[in-house]
Image 1: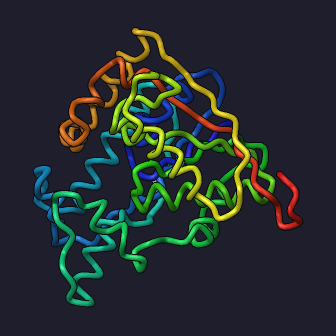
Image 2: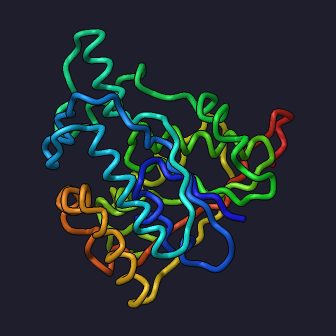
Length: 269
């Protein structure tokens, strides 16, 4: 049994398509997929074409279900709110500036009050995970607070003795091009970007072994077609990443790391 912890609807498809389309039982848990209160729209959602954020998130969920139904996968949506909606609520109660439509991740990443502790997620999510499950969690490459929170939950679960793999957040991990271990002539920023995320996901050392999956032309085409069915977000993601999310030579690569972290006794788990 495999469980993919996906920060938002669409992250599992972008980052772990080879897992979703493998044989065996797999379930997706969308963590930050809660429906915000009705009657407002964030600047980001408005820029993407939304009239109301609650309706927009319902639409994102519906698109995700269509994509995952098409490959026979079950999805569970949790009620934690996306950081943009948490920031909107904070702006109303503390009269601080609303997050912008541009560079929203950078704008909210520095606001510590918006971070969700992995222990908070653990209270809800741990009991949903079968003891024998192989859990996939994101590294948090790119620094999106929701991705980082789910990645830290993965580390917490590994510390408890659960089987956990960390997957490279796509297309974040290819923002500067492919890393040097995939393309030696790549921009050095790619390696720094990925290594920094791995080193910051937990305060203690993490023992990892990197695994690279290169999908066939047929599979990467299927993946991109599936990703395009997220009509609410795909065009904006593709523009933000300079077309990389529609480039087969970029999107064919998926990466995951075996995860070992010290237990409370100091020994690797």
